[in-house]
Structure formats: structure tokens, C-alpha cells
Length: 122
Image (spheres, one colour):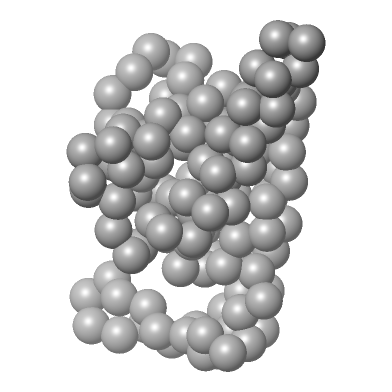
């Protein structure tokens, strides 16, 4: 599997950061940390989405302006994301926060895997 590009809204970016495991090997945790840094809102996001800080550590933004940004995610991190989303869904713990991530990431991968299985049976 190659790197894939996903268009993610700020809500989805925050949800994705929460989804990653907090434990793992050194290399994997380094990959997670790198992607988390990319997913955080930058100055461009603050300007374009009218982001303002509220309270202690909270952010508010203009959701109507959030058309998402493209992020390239590699196969190792995609595997972790896919596993976390599937585990949540199988355990009936998939919540609204992860719903759009599930639709963008898990469902297409399931469909691709199913197509490969069918192709292999022919």
C-alpha cells in the first residue's frame, strides 16, 4: 500500500490525533508524532478559519469556512488508523467524532480489500 492523500477538516484532524495509540515502539511513535505536528492548526488555518482561543486550551473556528486540507498518510500510520477505527466499530464504540474518518478511511480500505479477495478467487 502506498501513501494516500486525505482531505481532513479541523474536526477530523483533532479526532485523528486522539485516535492514535499512546504506546508503541520508538519508530512508530515517531511517525505518529510527526503526523500529529502536521495535523495541528497552523497560522494559515488560524487566519482562514477565524480560529480563536477560548478558555484554557480550547479553540473555536468558523466551521462553514473549513473545506479541509490534504494530508498525505503512509501505510504504517494508515494501518494504525484503520485498526483503531475497526476496533472501535467492532466494539460498538465508534462515535460521531470518528464517523467521517471511518467513512473516508476504513470503508474505502474494506472495499479495496474485498475487491482484492474477489480478484484472487477468480
